[in-house]
Image (cartoon, rainbow, N blue to C red; front, side, top):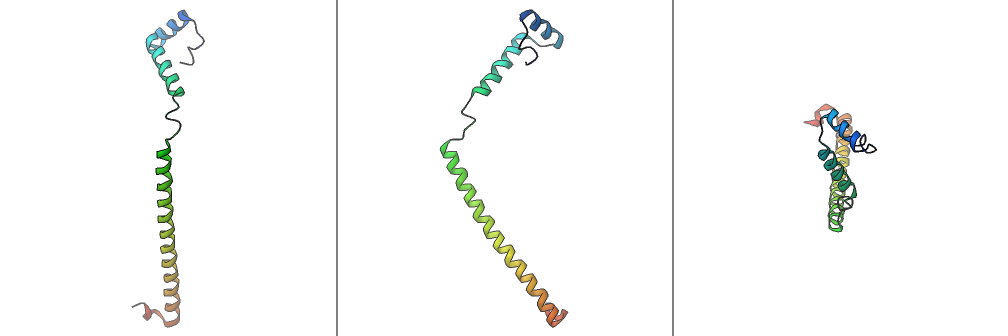
Length: 94
């Protein structure tokens, strides 16, 4: 499409013949590309979508915080188990 934008009708027809494309297809592609670029509806999410996204983000952040706390607790328990093992010997594990 870009290659044919500056061509006149005769040159565009010759280009289409050379590349095996119909001029009508070229025009159709151009119209669909322009329509896709001009469509602002797809560019901005709706306010409802924004609210849902924020709610989802909050939920995920809460879940992440909960899992971080659980991981920290598990790490602390492992450190404590290692210290007990070092103090009382290997028999403390069983």
